[in-house]
Length: 460
Figure 1 (cartoon, helix red, strand yellow):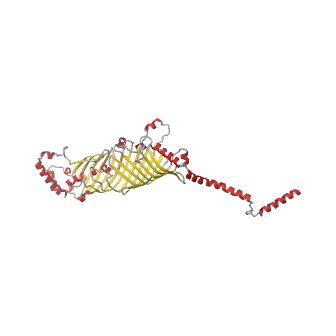
Figure 2 (cartoon, rainbow, N blue to C red; figure 1 turned 135 degrees about the vertical axis):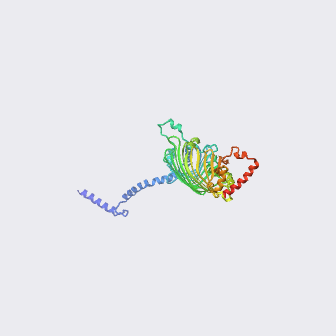
Figure 3 (cartoon, rainbow, N blue to C red; figure 1 turned 180 degrees about the horizontal axis):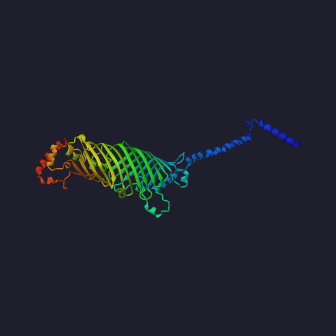
């Protein structure tokens, strides 16, 4: 028992000495403090380790190897030549591509895609494991060229071509028509649309929007920007799975300044057919199209749609139709500054209209007919309201001559968008009417003079 008491007293004394140690903090021994700090540093280190490790990866990552891996992956998937100036690993995750160019196979001297900067949510770990499957992509200050060559082929046709043979060989195997769950954003992008057969070149600036792959092979795009100083909106849906590729889209624009690159308007407005001068004016358009197929023949048969077009004002000086109308009515120099309004439909490989109105001078001109996708056209042109302005005495005189009043105020346009032939009803194939074949040259010239005088009085 004495030993026990001695031991207890020694422990009590030691505890008092320890508690009065100047190194003690609030009665907690230094040994305990060390354990507390160690307990705090462990979770703190766990929290700070990933950011520090990522910063270390960003600083020392093998970006040259990653750049080569991305180039090889893009070349295999697109079949195009790829050039990439730099690749950076971002602190917030993902990679950033700088100076990306994609061109024709074995050449990037004339790229169809240039991008100053592209951000992709592919981590360096995925690249190390040989994976390149982004889900988000953002392109800044890019330039995209969409070209249709003179032979009708598209520069990017093979990128959207449907591989029907491969699908038929394995119906049980999973079929991939394209990327899935990929969301793409574009900012401050330029799109060049070049159609060599129709001599059309459109430049869309300040393009912004996004594209989403809803599922494998189904793509939805929404874009907006400016076309020749006028705003535009474009929406499209493309489905490449389940047979022939299907698409539908709508394009709207307003207050667009016309220029020499808009020769495609000749397919919509026959008044512009055969024009040699530069287009001048402003345009408003709303078009909806739907179709299927990847070749021109199939696409031409399936394409349907409708739209409206307003050209106001439009300079028509030098166009074949206005030159011919000047023979039928007195047109001043200011009458060449006209307005055109049209509603049209697209079906059966043709662009048809029954409601195209040309207003030049004091008499509106009604035009109806069609233009096919090869550029051939056939239209009827009528001076609207002229018959109602003829006095009764003149009507009796005309009826006594057994003349069709409508034939005096109508024309026919035939030919193609590059060259049109304008004839009057009753004109023979060799360009002479049946009346001209009977009357001699001297009397024919006299009748022409009288006809001009009568026409001028009629139009006034």
